[in-house]
Length: 118
Image (cartoon, rainbow, N blue to C red; front, side):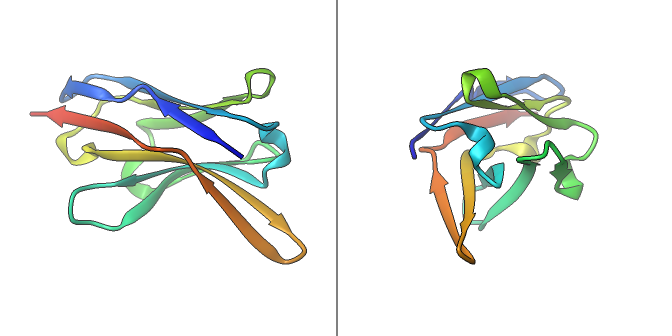
């Protein structure tokens, strides 16, 4: 499984960005597709998730201004980020999680840098 993330960049506070993650497999076969982020000196945290059934979940810090979606025909997952804040600055990683025989398999994209200036 290969994941290619894109869409990061430098924006000002209050602006928007949309990240994309293209998968080499049918994303509906994954138990969930996820976006994580890692700020400098911090751990990698889950930001948003979409299950194979289409259920979405968000970290409390991004609820209401980040939105995860998918286009299964394009095997692509998106993260729409609105009203960006400097604290959203991080490297954003796409993740695909598969559950098989009680084992969890995680695949990661290369990360895309989002920088929000104040």
